[in-house]
Length: 113
Ligand SMILES: CC/C=C/CC(=O)SCCNC(=O)CCNC(=O)[C@H](O)C(C)(C)COP(=O)(O)OP(=O)(O)OC[C@H]1O[C@@H](n2cnc3c(N)ncnc32)[C@H](O)[C@@H]1OP(=O)(O)O
Image 1 (cartoon, helix red, strand yellow):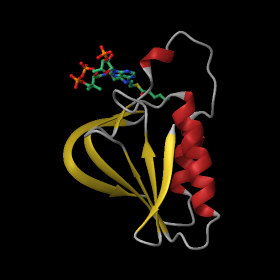
Image 2: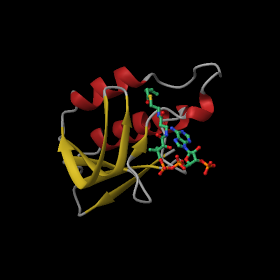
Image 3: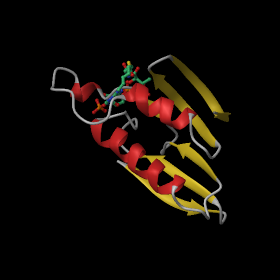
Image 4: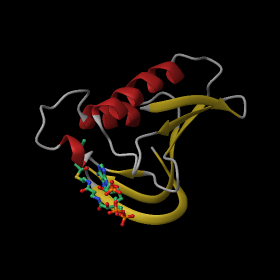
């Protein structure tokens, strides 16, 4: 899943939650879609941060779903929706960040769309 909270008044925080590595399961992708919609429609939210939990940003595709029927929102349109966001979106990356177009393992840092 993805948890939505509002921090520092105007910042929407989307936390990827799928132990052990916050992989992009169907539920997580749906959670990101839902929380993005919620944050973008909230006038008090001016910017968004997407983060992982437990010192891991994201392990990429959820390998437990390999070999099963694809469900949930596909990743590429989801990424495009984030990039097209009318509010700035920052990825707060700690630890592993895998999937789709690349991979990295870094210290605490951030990238912005
Ligand atoms: C949806 C769109 C698709 C896009 C394409 C992709 O994303 S392709 C990339 C898919 N991801 C991977 O192939 C990552 C595979 N995992 C790893 O490389 C490593 O596990 C790690 C994430 C770098 C972490 O390494 P580390 O040494 O810290 O831990 P472990 O290897 O011991 O793993 C710990 C437990 O986490 C489970 N796990 C790892 N990756 C995933 C994953 N992607 N999905 C679900 N679960 C994952 C692993 O099985 C271990 O579980 P245990 O129960 O403790 O055995």
